Length: 473
Ligand SMILES: [Zn+2]
Ligand SMILES: [Zn+2]
Image 1 (cartoon, helix red, strand yellow):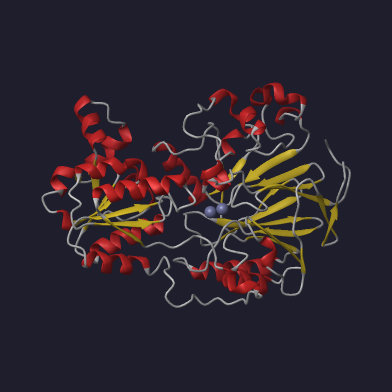
Image 2 (image 1 turned 45 degrees about the horizontal axis):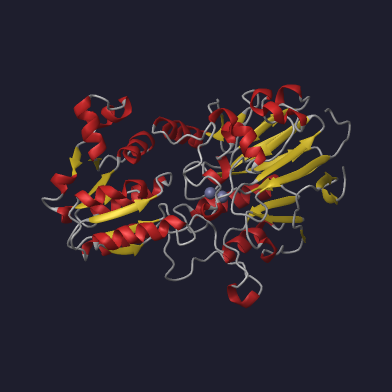
């Protein structure tokens, strides 16, 4: 499919007006870079209701049929495409050199990366790569086995005449970055997901400076927090200040400590454990309230592999006790139990007020074995995230049954509108393409052109300008 044209072609395959599922391709001659390969996050309309069995060997075909993954030529293997080969060119038969680059390991950015043909390299930042390997060990890898390549912040690499430079950002997950993509026609910057109210706002400053140093023509930026009602549709004013009273990654440990100090009974928390900063914050909150942090095995494993924090206990669930008794404990679990002190519900119940215990939603029934009297359940961005997820009602029902108080102490991973606008203004691109948003039109450029991208349209980058070629093909 070698194209003898001297311009860069940009195409959007997913994630424009949804939260996540972002897939964008950038082509120059016979080279192509695709960034992110996730699934749209929408628990309320998910076809997989827990009753339909997924077909491991038909996954790519099924997902194509359900429009869960994009119908792109040359990305899936002939074997996985099967009968779908009538509609799509398999990776093996595609003349292009393709690489996929991943901004971070949230499912809305990686959920389908296991579907990509093994012949196509998929790049993760070094930190994402390490995190992904740890996730695979604890059974949280994405469906589909394949290899991954690693890349590093600030270190450029090339796919044909396309040069990619990952630049670190701050997001609520380890290893997040944006990508500077340079072709002979101009440069594009994809932010991935980012925020200014995280633990490392200085990373965003560095990111902006790096982007400005490298120079860009088009900025593709996430806009998760843009809503259509905020401030009665007044223009968003750019401002890097964190609004007073807003809970941030930095203020969470103290807020949790305060709550725990006024709680007599057991402290319980529900987090999304890919946010390693939050896990460290939980340990700090425990120390600040003279409690011991207790983590489930999977999370303890991530802490052990990815941090220098060891001040915690490992929770011995009913399942783990059974595995121990029957000699069926997986290696990684028994390794962990050798290195860290563990504690069972029975032991915690002797003095529940001395602990801050992790409980993920899938393990919610463990709470039935615990003395939660005068305790507190602190929801801190673990699933179910909110009332838009039908499971949230379920969680509330169970907590009601247990008669345990509920509190939310968390912080989102996405820049608030004034921060998004600040980033846009500082970079001041010629073309601004907001996506990963229900209301991308709310984010306006400082002096350039706002381009609300559409599916099925070829965007041409030539002489540092972008043109939309609608109705082509
Ligand atoms: Zn996202
Ligand atoms: Zn994300």
